[in-house]
Amino acid sequence: MKNIVILISGRGSNMQAIVDTEIAGARIAAVISNKADAEGLAWARERGIATASLNHKDFDGREAFDAALVQLIDGYAPDLVVLAGFMRILTPGFVGHYENRLLNIHPSLLPAFTGLHTHERAIAEGVKFAGCTVHFVTAELDHGPIVAQAVVPVLDHDDAAALAVRVLVEEHRLYPQAVADFVAGRLTISGQRVLRRD
Ligand code: GRF
Image (cartoon, rainbow, N blue to C red; front, top):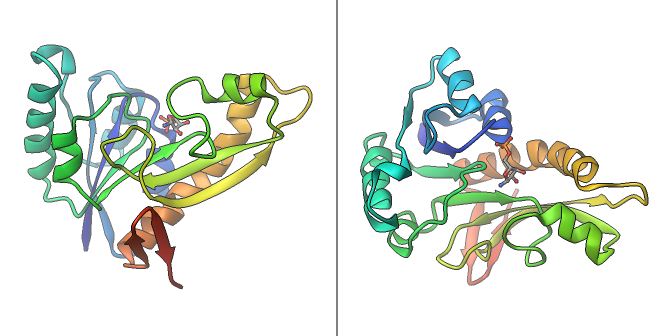
């Protein structure tokens, strides 16, 4: 059994999709949030999953918060740490500690539109396709080796909210699949590329 720890900050719909997939060979060891009132925490708790929260505001700087977060996470002996809407920039120390076992989902076709407000920016730039990306996390924000991507069309009448809904449907399909691929040992990192074998 591979232990998975999922980090969230809000509603946790990607976390829910991963939990509901009941990935063979995986166990959700804990769901952790930097916000005690994150909707997703209550959802996980109701399902009997261990939950914890650690408020970044209680710490003097990013290094101190990340060090405490590592301690908390490692208490669950994770084989994989999954960022699912975890709205914190992580320090190189944190990222290095979980090298090659830290995944994130970003709501754009990376390397386009790193950072926040991806859907607004995609519409403003006039792109015809948007989507989402699952990637291994490296120290550079939203730049790690790409595991999987899904594409959706940008429609003429789209606003950011409508596009976000269409992308989210794909996120909920893509992320559990990527986690399952990791758990099954199907992924190999080769430089900036991730090779997947069936
Ligand atoms: C998703 O759009 C994800 O791509 C981004 O933050 C959002 C989190 O949504 N990183 P949820 O908390 O999983 O519902």
